[in-house]
Image 1 (spheres, one colour):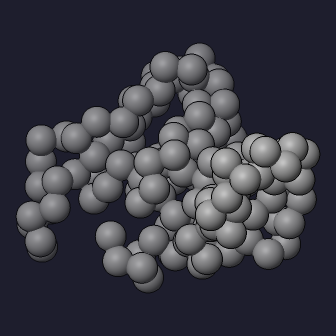
Image 2: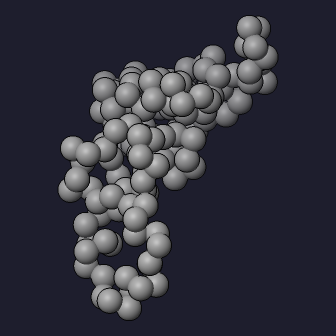
Amino acid sequence: MTDDEAYELGQRALAAGMEWSRGCVDGSTGMTVLDAWHIYGMSTAAMAAFGQHRSHTISLWQQSRLGWPDFRDPATLGVLLAQVRDALRCPWLYVTPTGGRRQSDGALLWEWHGMAYGKSAKGWGWPSEAEALVAALEAAP
């Protein structure tokens, strides 16, 4: 996934209702989102141990400074999966490769399966796991 594709996908997810959560990576800065306690509530010893990583974090209360979630990061993708499951009220929703490939570039296609408000639901044909999940979030009522 290119930077432009990642940006567009992150913007779509935010527009569909994704919320920033601890562990997400901000694609515009590369910083990991932590809550304020994790950054400012640490003891001096803990801060010394945390050390160099502190400069690569941003707290949730600074959301106005966040750009777009980067789903190339596994933790951010996991947050999206959890939020899709919540939005569709389906705790066992999953995403899997279809076995098919896109004709234009041979990319493996992905699909999601689950229940949306008690009805079987699925979607397929996306070129990445993240795109399938964003599409599922967009389909949520």
